[in-house]
Every structure is written in C-alpha cells, then in structure tokens.
Length: 342
Ligand code: FAD
Image (cartoon, rainbow, N blue to C red; front, side, top):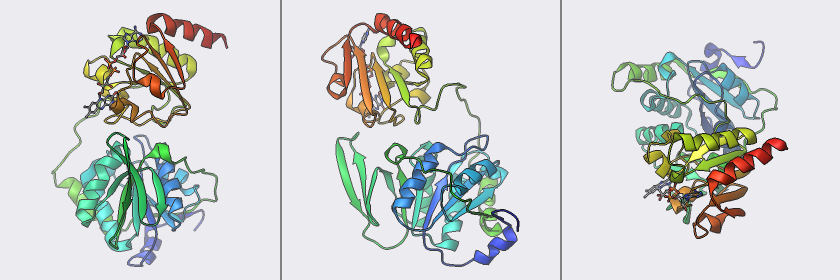
C-alpha cells in the first residue's frame, strides 16, 4: 500500500492480537483539526515508555489523524462515522469499550478537557475500571500526581491492582508533543467495534440537540500565550470590551472570573478556575479579579502573573509577579495605548 495508511481489511490482521501499550484517545475538533490538548496527552503517554496508539473518532478526522501520525507514535486508529460527528459520550465510550476488549491496552489516556471529562469516566464504568483524573505528573508506571481541593493539596496516587489504568491528564502540565516525526501507520478500527458503537448511537438513549459557541478570532483560552482576565468589577459587557481591546493589542485571549460569568456579563466558556478552564499562559493579567483560591486554581501555572486592582489587600497580589494598585478603567486604556506604540 502506498503511504502510511492501512486499509480496514489489512487491519483485521491485528484482530485479537495482544497489543501492550498505551491508547491515547485524541480529540478532533468540529471541523476536523486536532485539539492541541491531545498533543500534551501524547507527551504524557510518552513518559509511560510504552508503544503508543492514538484513537481519533469523528466525522472528518483525517487532518487530526495526520497530525497525530507525526508525533512519533506507533499507530493511529481512525473511527470515522457520522455517529461520532458530535462528542457524545455514549457511542464513543461504547467504542472505547469494544476496542479495549479486543486490544487490551495497559493504559488509556485522554486530555482532561470537557471532552475527556465527559468520555473517560463513562468508558471506565463500562470497563469496570477506577479512572484517575487531572494527572499533572507521572512518577512511575503506577504512581501519579494530581491536585485536589483547588490545588491546595497535591495527591500522590498509586494503582495497586493489575489491569487497565485509565486517566485524564491536565494538558497545561505537559508540553505539546512535536509533530515532525516520520508518519506512523494509520488504520481503521475493526468493523465489529464500530458497529457496536453505532448501535448505541442509534439506540436513541441520547441525541445531540444543539451547540451555541462564541465565534472569535482570538487564540484559544487554554493554549494562548497571553490571557487577559476580568472580574465582576467590570460590571457589564461594555466593561469587558475594554479588556477585549487590550487582549487584541497583546494578541491574547480573554478570560473571566466565575463572578463575572454568574452575573451574566460574559458567557461561561470564558470562565477560568477550578470549575472553569485551566490556563498556563506566558502572561496572565488579572484585572478587577480578587484572586479567590477557586480562581487561582486555574491560573497558578502561568509563567508571569500580573494584577490590576484597587484593593492592595486583594489575594491575587500574594500570587502576582507584578501588581498595580489602581483603577482599571484608567489603567487599562493607558496600558493598551503603550502596547500599541511598541
Ligand atoms: P470579586 O471577589 O467581587 O472581586 C472583584 C475585585 O475587583 C475586587 O478585588 C475589587 O477590589 C476589584 N475592583 C473593584 N473595582 C475595581 C476597579 N475599578 N479597578 C480595579 N479593581 C477593581 N471563581 C472563579 O473565578 N473560577 C472558578 O472556577 C470558580 N469556581 C468556584 C467553585 C466553587 C465550589 C466555589 C464555592 C466558588 C468558585 N468560584 C470560582 C468563585 C470564587 O470563590 C470567587 O467568588 C470569584 O472568583 C470572585 O470573582 P471576582 O474576583 O470577579 O469578584
């Protein structure tokens, strides 16, 4: 066969074979591109030292599969079907169950994004497995570190039982794998496994209703180099426009505290923190955000933290590398003016 691709007939040669190694469940974004968090999951998998297979599910996945194939892994498995056109956990977990029953991986890893948080626990329940979530460090083959209580406690967790080890990994704790290696093999998942998952999709137990997403030209919040984050003090959407303008001058993303989201000032996909997104930019700018522990749980890994707040006692000053005590409504336009002069 030309190229790295192996047909589904050829892949049946692997049927039933014991394949020790790690399965990375990758995430293809709507539109077919690989979610960058999957590259961080590959890095985590590399640290386990086993051959890596990546599985990508979706409707249009060739682009994502090609990116995965260049990360130095052993193989990419494609599950291309309209049943996976939307990230519904029910059919996808049925596929993971079927694939694991056939191939017996030692580890199954997925990013701790909303995709992974939705999918992996369900697959773990089907496989009778206790998964580990939000892994930030791998100490050895069975020992892993994860934060708890909004990062105020760090737990060292050890798998004591033999068998499959499933976990979600925090993508900001693992750098993205480079994707310049020789392309790995690609093959389709076995027909029977696909059929089992498609049957679940057609059972009607769950269905995709709709999606409301914010269209933005700004970088993705979780992988941006600069994050400008605003709090409740911005008062309204107009106040946030001031932050958006600064973020655009810096080429950054906009985030928000939960209080700003709960007040209806911005949509909840911007929320940063324990119950929002985890960010680790080169520069995090907290503007009119107090710095509650639940907020800082999503910010702590930023390389540089800078804060603008009228209250010098605001908790964020304790975590900040740079702080300015003053009114953001004057400081932010001034800062933007200077940035645009650079
Ligand atoms: P505030 O605490 O009201 O702070 C506003 C800040 O703006 C103050 O420090 C004030 O001094 C400053 N300010 C006011 N005017 C100006 C001005 N003109 N210029 C400059 N500064 C000004 N929060 C999150 O953010 N993310 C989470 O994921 C999250 N998860 C949570 C989970 C749980 C289980 C719980 C209980 C809480 C969670 N919270 C979370 C909420 C968190 O505890 C705080 O309530 C929230 O972060 C506060 O948001 P804030 O800083 O915008 O608001």
